[in-house]
Length: 367
Ligand SMILES: [Zn+2]
Image (cartoon, rainbow, N blue to C red):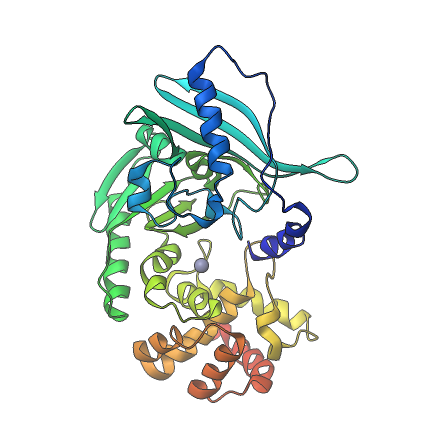
């Protein structure tokens, strides 16, 4: 997603303005409840939801349980609420629940729409007044839930639950938490064969970047892990949900590298990604790894921060075990901090990284 985030940044200044709301249909003015829900949604959009502060239009329970209570907000960087005009496509009612389908988009100079997302919100009464609710909280009632150890596994009714993999995930949790000296905390784990099934569960019908062939994919949120294509065992995201929050002063390459070392990436081991990176770099002698932190994705399934970050993490653990790996998670957020940590603990200066990493990669098949 990182290339995508950078891409979006170019658009923010041009679309940032007060939130506009339009409708793709003639609202039913005879239904006072529909009008109430429309007003609720408009009020919410006008309340600066990007800040995720205490909000009169969102239900109390989710606000109490989650700092970022609107799960759609963090689906985009810096936020879903970055100023895109909102076009309401439909408002549907089922029993006492309203579903609002909204498109976040703007019209480009040539007249074609630039669509960021099509998302769904739910509205439900709280003490007689409609409040917004995450689609996830409503939709998951149709999914199954099985608790094993620290994890509440949510999955579609068509999925047959794999108890062995669920237990293996708990073994992974106990192991990494003990190695990092952390007490595990319970979390929710949403799984499906395809990641977009989970996106729909969360209320995302469309998001910029959707498409391509279906591959294992995961994402970690606040007390939540979302995984497509890997069943009950997706350790990479589980590392993020449990460990990251304990180390606020870390570089993204440290976290992604260790997650890949311990849990692989997109269903493949660090070694698998290393072999691929080895042959890629052999074909690209011009790539200067002294500036490795400027590199992003190698292709659609391998990213440099995962694979080279993973290689660095492996050198740390070889050199000083879990203590040194924990040190890497505390070594600072800036690029210079990360380079400095490598120099301090591995004795490799930034200007020696290209030679060092290429030599390390030469030995990859022997791992
Ligand atoms: Zn990750």
